[in-house]
Length: 171
Image 1 (cartoon, rainbow, N blue to C red):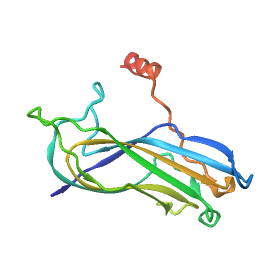
Image 2: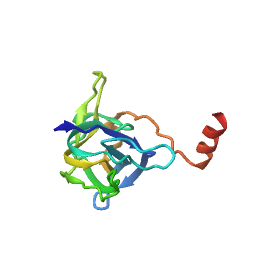
Image 3: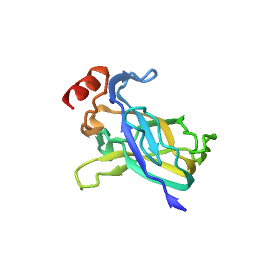
Image 4: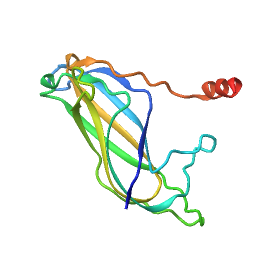
């Protein structure tokens, strides 16, 4: 059995300041969202994935593309939520319904910077077995003290109709 590639496509990260309901403590709420394309990436024009149909293992731990880098010692009261939903299961090349297989509950954990810089970033772990290529939407919410962020994550720009028109004109 071969391994399936996983590609994360992030949406713009949302950072807001919240106040704890019971404590009045100031908290940073960060919402990360995007799509995990498993097995293949979608066609640029149609947005649909190809019909590759074979059994593959999924065992992937990837940093969120726009993760903040956090001071681990300041995360004693951090709260993290993760949710995923199946977005796309393409048909087979014989035009029959594709099969998901099984995707385990996604896990989010803090890991040290891969280049040895200060802080720990968020990694999304996806495991399972697939038969068809899959699109899986994800959302991760982190609530922590604002001082816990030692370095802001990269900014992800939303691609909208104006961006697509500019790309078409440039070609």
